[in-house]
Length: 212
Image 1 (cartoon, rainbow, N blue to C red):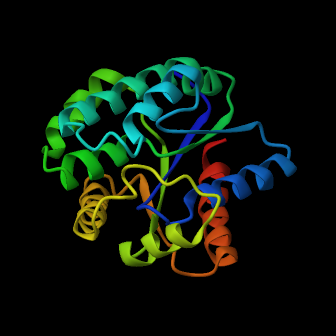
Image 2: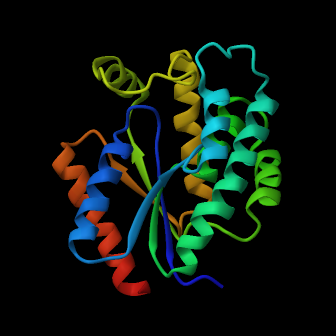
């Protein structure tokens, strides 16, 4: 059994979780914690290649099941190469998205059934699950507006989906939170960046103090 902490950040497009993740990394590095960051899909070369295929704006013909399987494949390789080794070092690893994204996006928003997506991913991840997940909640309209105002942000295929899709993603996340209330903590991402960061630090500090 690994002894590190696996903490994931989740949320709809434009919720600001990636920005906050970088700020959390800096905060805990300054405290002397052994902490790493990564992302899904991606984090290691093979998974980054799969990311390019999944998220390329030109790949609009991609079948929903193909999308789900590619996410699971990228997730497996990422776990083996990066997440599990970090946990074996007894480090904290912060991951931008994990299995909850697949449940919300492919399982609920794509209508593939969350249990089927879970079964695919259980084969991929084995027994590895996050101990803590920060869910950044934001109205999809606001998130999409943020995306279009941010010049240096990657605009991917999922960003180009219509508003009803993103509304279903948010509903999907609410369903996921109902499944895992002991693991997922909701953060109001509509507040100031400082407010979001402080809330995230408060949640993480409490968890770290109780588990390390």
